[in-house]
Length: 259
Ligand SMILES: NC(=O)c1ccc[n+]([C@@H]2O[C@H](COP(=O)([O-])OP(=O)(O)OC[C@H]3O[C@@H](n4cnc5c(N)ncnc54)[C@H](OP(=O)(O)O)[C@@H]3O)[C@@H](O)[C@H]2O)c1
Image (cartoon, rainbow, N blue to C red; front, side, top):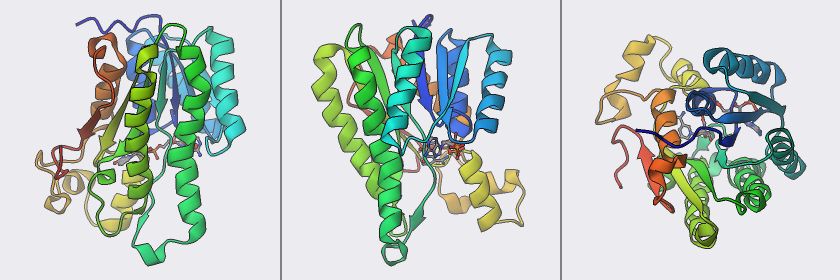
């Protein structure tokens, strides 16, 4: 199937590791020119070189912190200046933060919302005017726990629930400009975040044991791979999904209790 992505330009926030890096790689394989951002410049440069070497595609790495509004503006502007347009935005930057209510300090609420909600809002706000010219596609990477928050999932499940509402409202608002907005709700996908969790929760297990640990309660019986999330994102931003907007797709091996 031709995904119709050749020649498009994408910006992926948090594109230096995990799901973001794998998404940039998959898009680059499809002939998309990619701009990636993250805070750590060394990782960012290494990831950009890796994508170039693997795919032969042009990659623009931009050091940025998406909790800063001015950085969101800069990454969009630099991407458009370098590539001449912007067709795809993947709001992926994020970290893990989950605790019971009384353990969450006020500043942690603010930091989580700044990163996961306002980062997506500010980047999208900058990107939309460029997408209005010829249509575009935005993916907000959220989490399945935004739909079914467990007791110790704060503040992240709240930030993610807001990301779901943001996705739906934006999709309705921007449909007339042919800008599609969807979200992917991640369950457990192997990445930097999850590897830290593995070392913390079960250092006595090797990865093969940990990923299949029944305590995760994943119907497909294992933690997912970043590539498996990236391929769904690539499909959703492609022409193959041209009539899909305002949708939330669980990428969780069936773990979530809701559709
Ligand atoms: N993996 C999972 O199971 C899982 C589950 C639910 C939701 N998610 C969500 O999926 C997304 C990707 O997660 P992942 O597991 O692939 O994470 P990861 O491997 O830890 O990668 C996170 C990426 O985001 C960047 N980043 C973090 N804070 C940033 C900031 N303030 N500004 C710019 N970039 C920033 C990181 O680079 P720097 O640190 O250098 O900035 C890195 O490139 C996140 O939004 C995460 O919350 C993941």
